[in-house]
Image (cartoon, rainbow over all chains, first blue to last red; front, side, top):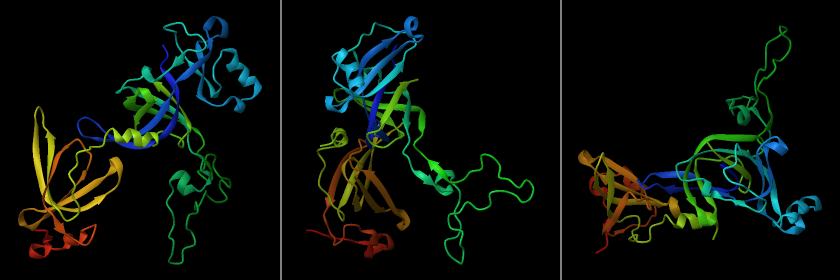
Length: 207
Length: 114
């Protein structure tokens, strides 16, 4: 059964439940994903669907990628991704589309995306260190402080928390609840936040 | 109109009676208990309106027993609010009536439009 889809983060807002609770939701525009290639266990070693998502103009794809789409009469897509499937419940062929009807309100989803890149960050932002005094003669404002001992061991331990690149990594939300689904606009409302900036791609998978 | 505005519009109420800071209002709130719903009223003066769209809130201040001020902030479009009834219209020169917080008795009064 196909229980996953690719989507694009639209933004965040809040909506009301029937009992009056206000819920913070992230709006994800998910699908429709068009099947480009079907991979099966006998031929490829595993079952999966190669899908395209997010239509773009023909001018924007290069010739090798364009050929994949034009072979199957599909409008060119920005992303070409795979959805792993344990076993097919029906036969899929190139051109079939997968939409958000696979989800319903109340489902729990695993959401994978790439977090926002923050560049080279200090230890306060990166590892939640505390800062030093900003005044009263203090010069240690946002510095990491001592990083180790003296002549013994005369080295810094591996894994010491230090400044460095932060964000821009693959992050998975373990169980986000589907609050609502708007079928005619392909919008999924999931409770809580989702990694990435607006417009970034996310992968929604039912648990 | 972007997708989020369109989505929020679905949740907005259309039949909201006009009221502004300084007005005295009675807010009917639905309270769900184990197996029945009941309506509770909260009456007081509106001291602020804030936010936009689905996030719009207003704060009502009332003086309870022993001159203790009680403030409640409501989401204007919340389905919990059954009705908002305007009792009188106050004459105020500010949008946020925080000055009422420090006043008791006669000083805490607001002029009323006749």
